[in-house]
Amino acid sequence: MRAVTVIPGVPGSLRLLDDYPEPAPEEGPILVEALSVGVCGTDIEIIDGQYGEAPPDTDHLVLGHESLGRVLEDPTGTRQPGDLVAGIVRHPDPMPCPNCAVGEWDMCRNGLFTEHGIKALPGFARERWRLQPRFAVGLDPSLIEVGMLLEPTSVMVKAWDHVDRIGLRAEWQPRTALITGAGPIGLLAALLASQRGLSVHVLDLATEGPKPALAGALGATYHSGPLDQLDLEPDVIIECTGAPVVVLEAMCKVGPNGIVCLAGVSSGGRTIDFDAGALNRTLVLENNVVFGSVNANRRHWEGAAEALSKADHAWLGSLITRRVPLAQYATAYSPGPQDIKVVLDFAA
Image 1 (tube, rainbow, N blue to C red):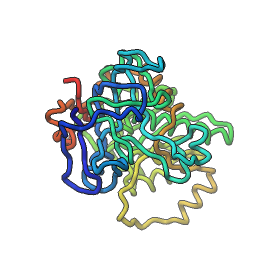
Image 2: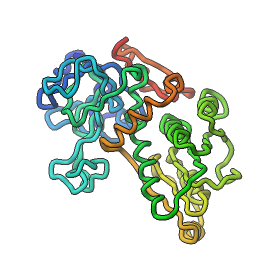
Image 3: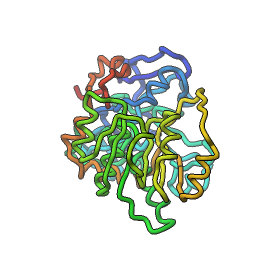
Image 4: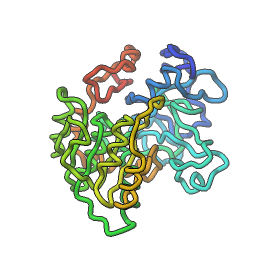
């Protein structure tokens, strides 16, 4: 079968293999036919050789962690042939650590987890894959065109879940949310904020292209100026850019008793002069909280499936700015300036 692979740590090793082995039975009893795979910045960084880890028995890593497939067979009866499913990306470590032992592998403490398409597990950019039932998440049939958005949505469901948990430290009645970054993660964060009935603001550098309209369709106010000049004191900021300047300004901009979730990953290697004392004073005297969030557990994946089902499916489809047939796979991993979400289409 065909599979999109790299040799981790080797830039330029992206290949479409025609003779990749069929998924091993040990991967799970549920056999799935791939429909599509979303492409994200993690894939690009792995292709560039920045990180990634192949499974123990091979030099190749199959890419793809934003999955959508159709069940071909499931002898356990958990799923029926034809069901739409996505595969949970992270698997718990074998030890396991205290969090992995209770199904919270997104909070793994010892780093021995594995991840499809990223760390020691083959990804979903192959024509067929297998899953254990507990890692298979069902989707409503109406999501067949956009179900690959489940993985990034699960990441944002977790972020909002943790915002809610932190908010319970006091009387918590948030009204305003600011999302920094209008990529797929940022726009999905804005979607979830709008579903919560919050007044939503989205900040991004883009002044043209689809981003302003996509934010506006959610009822959000779109901003493209500097963050520190916004006339706004949000109760919640979800920071999705990873840009160091924006990260610091978000910490300073949130309102009293506010919560800042850092969901973007900075590249590092850049230093910025800032007044750490003033930041400390603000965080302490205003009871503010800053926390980081990544990945998701099954509870968040199921919440994401519910959120996508409730969303405007046409709006979700507008996030997908390019669908690339498998035969043209390489172009999927070369994002254009107007791209939001690129999808590799196995069903074309």
